Image 1 (cartoon, rainbow, N blue to C red):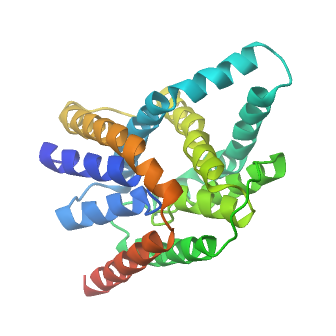
Image 2 (image 1 turned 90 degrees about the vertical axis):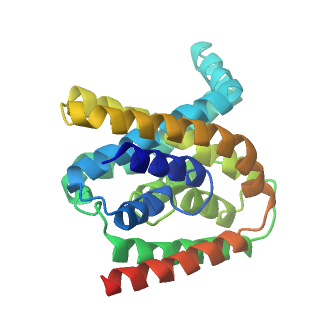
Length: 264
């Protein structure tokens, strides 16, 4: 993969991670358009690296929230911070289960699978449309809600299903306040991505070749910087704007992806 291509894909990842438009789906479309011939394993490796970059940008932007959670856990008290931390951990279980037992099958879904991305983007559009019609409430995330949202996050492993779109839509459909839903959605993915990185590193699944380091590094930096900008600016857009605009966007991009896939 060329460095310029890696930077472009990194920017795409950073910008789309925090909007409900499926960063993984856009990455796969970007690879197909740029003519990336990487095998599925390398494609998945690059995707994980870019997700790690945006996870790091999330930690930087939400550093105050992260510190509050850590303080609550270290105090060993049954307070709001401790409960929120346990909800985050609970939400991780569905995706962690899928990742551990179906990883090989998931790898085959990555690597310019444009038709799948198109169909999944249509589903994302439907989720966002339904969430947009939900009533506004001030309900907080409960433990049961956290698990259900975690199931949505597990389904969003599929390229084209927006992780933030699926989790925020599920939260809103459960009656949770949009601001609380967005905060929970962005924070819940951080430990999951870090766990995935640790598993791959210690499991020997990530094998850096000298030819890959430059492109992976460029993609990582581009995704991190773009993620910082996107997370600080676009998170307000997610919370305040109507989700129907993102639904229309995902629907149109999904149709284009399906047409592109059928044409090729």
